[in-house]
Image (spheres, helix red, strand yellow):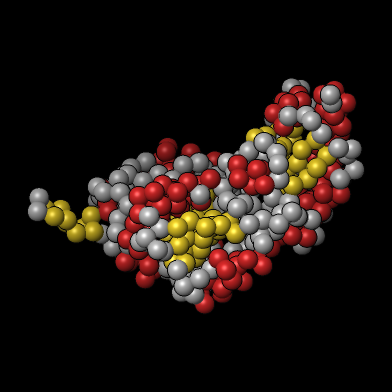
Amino acid sequence: MRQFPSLAMEVEGVDKIRQDFPILQRQINQKPLVYLDNAATSQKPTLVLQVLDDYYRCHNANVHRGVHTLSEEATASYEHARLRIARFINAASYKEVIFTRGTTESINLVAHTWGRTNLRPGDEVLITAMEHHSNIVPWQILQAQLGFTLRHISVTPDGLLDLSELDSLLTERTKLLSLVHVSNVLGTINPVPELVAAARRVGAIVLVDGAQSVPHMPVDVQALDVDFLAFSSHKLCGPTGVGVLYGKRALLEEMPPFLGGGDMIREVKLSGSQWNTLPYKFEAGTPAIAQAIGMGAAVDYLTAIGMDWVHEHEQQLTRYAYERLGQIAGLRMLGPGPEARGGLIAFTLGDIHPHDLSAALDHEGIAIRAGHHCAQPVHDHFGVVASARASFYLYNTPDEIDQLVVGLEKARKLLAF
């Protein structure tokens, strides 16, 4: 297993990591690629690319249903990936790891199985005002059908959850608290242990959107005591099209299936059907086999590096970026200071539209995100329609942040009205 340095800014360590990502050798507009759109999707190391290639070249078959060699090999690799992912988040059992298409489907699964079974008029679901749309819209759809009340925790002017109102919002009527671990706009790292403890006092269960936390920091579901955790492969160096819903086994056992057909059944009669055991009860049809195997390889890669290292590296990058961006005239950063945020910074620059900023930076070979980032309510809170967002990962360097600053200064002079 490769060893990486404990000091995140040690050049040799980051250089070794960058060599693992072929796409970082690309040039965009005749300039070296500076990839700062990691909150949208991460790049993939050679290890993951090789695993995907090997599966399709040598082992491609459907899982669980065949007794021939290829099917047995594919099944073993698919289930071994589930075991490694369970270890990665410290789940008590592999049966608590459900493969889905990603964070969005994982949250929808909870909404339309646990929610439809347990929520009634008079009940309340509590979310926050900094949620991604995937943790707002499913509850709004269900609310219209079932008649429960949907409430939210406000955001303070500095981008933190307003916990002063928690006692009035979290009551005996609250059945579920569903919140983001790390905001994809503000970067805010929310105090999940404190919020879980508060939910327990009123008997509520907790769902955490871990899309921006699981790839970037150690996440231990047993230590956090969350009931559900949703996250995606493509944000943690793995393929697109697959993700995970972690759920406590007792809750998953009680929940009805999400989709019908294929491997989620134990027995089907014309008079009725019986469901498969966990985790297969929630995995109808042919799963994303290659993608799940690739996700397992990505987890191996991150485990070899160490999630503590990844988190510290990003924290140092964020502190540096916060300082450097703060020197640009007219630039406004959304969210808290670097001590309370993960590895991303959303910002505006004067009256320049974020899409124009992104296009100008792309001319310099720099990739950022521009838009509302599927989080319109939090943009409304800060009085902006959209923002530009730079987001960092294990292969980014301080020099790339310097290049971002130079690019933004050019854009400011070119586009300022």
